Length: 228
Image 1: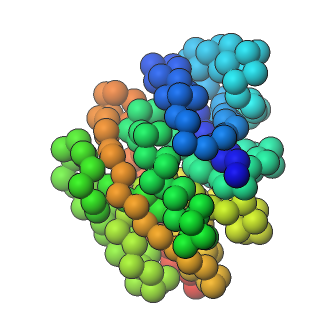
Image 2: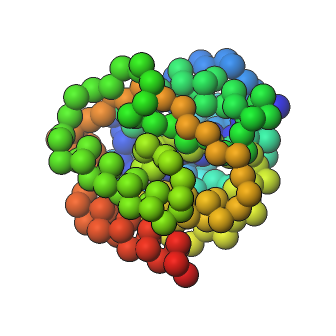
């Protein structure tokens, strides 16, 4: 089987080479890497063009900054793999976890696999209390509407059988992608698994971008996509 890694990227010149090299060196399954540059204003685009010229990635340039959800949709248009995996362009999540993430699908136990920073024995960087509390609150609120028992709805790592995610009409352009996709898969008769993953979180001075405003947007998306 083939894995399609979809990676939105916005201003990640300090990490993009290292994360791409980690993915390229991960050999548990054949893969293609689709990077969507979301109108970066640093050197990310030049770095990505170099990888593209060497045939190591498929590269898409957004004409303006559109957000994670929009970028994922652009990546899905090019994805040819049997399994689709969402990857951030920083170093918070490790491709060393790919094998554990895709195994439930390879074994035909799961249709969808979510990573979780809050289960299992994987190493996790100690960071912001209120940020962690916010993530757990959003997961709890989402679970109340979806009747799923996820522990980390906002985790970057989400893995899908190709036909599952390509059959879903996604609309959110920004970080609302996470609660939207969760609400929509909960309405289908799918086998959903969760796998503990490593988390090497970063601080805002290191380039972290999600803010409290995205939290309020997530609350709206949880309510909207579950009820309407």
